[in-house]
Image (cartoon, rainbow, N blue to C red; front, side, top):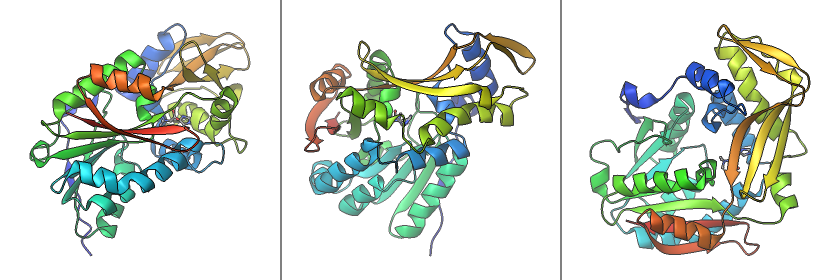
Length: 319
Ligand code: AVJ
């Protein structure tokens, strides 16, 4: 069975700031803030997969349900010779629904976590022997380009899971404009977007009873301890997640349970009791609001699917 994955090494300057630089810069901000991409070391990626299986976390299963129902329509819109590019290539079942409906000649997975990317693309190559599998490790919150040959193949970019929600609306529009630029004429973007809804449903999704989201959030501090020279104690911080209706976003924080000084790479940072490190925003859109954003980025909104409870949306955008 062929297990070969074409791995595209990325240019070093495209890699962005190191963990050390991101953490030192973020802890020096007021309020203290770290970018959500820092969650995704191997452990964080595993915890995220577990979040997706929690009963309160509706986005994953809802998006899967939407895709299962829409897969053939999607394949039809994408056309015969489409290739598939997945941004944030997880171990997900979602892309399999598309691969099986579209039967593309080639697939490119792009992810920030290199070992996770290697594992998930190898698995795809093993399960779909007819598929040419490519992998590229990249931070897609920064400008990037498709490896040679890919842009020409009538690509459908797939950005599932409402990962777009990590950008604020202005950044989201700039990110979409970048993708628009990257795609050839006629290229598509299939994007999953979480919808605004009842506050209790939203907040439960980020405060699962099993405590997996809390562990995911706290893993950021474990990671700082593992990978940097630091005495930060994850046990002195608590997970907090709530809906901020004015900004239409879930906010995640790590709140210091005491006044303390922490040292990271020789620099000292003070936390007052109750002071928080802001670790994530997850923006929620209305279907209309997102369409407006997409059209401002130059896209044509071709189709939209939702579930019966209107929890989640999947948009087909075209350049
Ligand atoms: C991957 C950004 C879509 O915001 O729901 C899940 C990440 N954080 N639980 C989300 C996340 C906490 C997730 N996204």
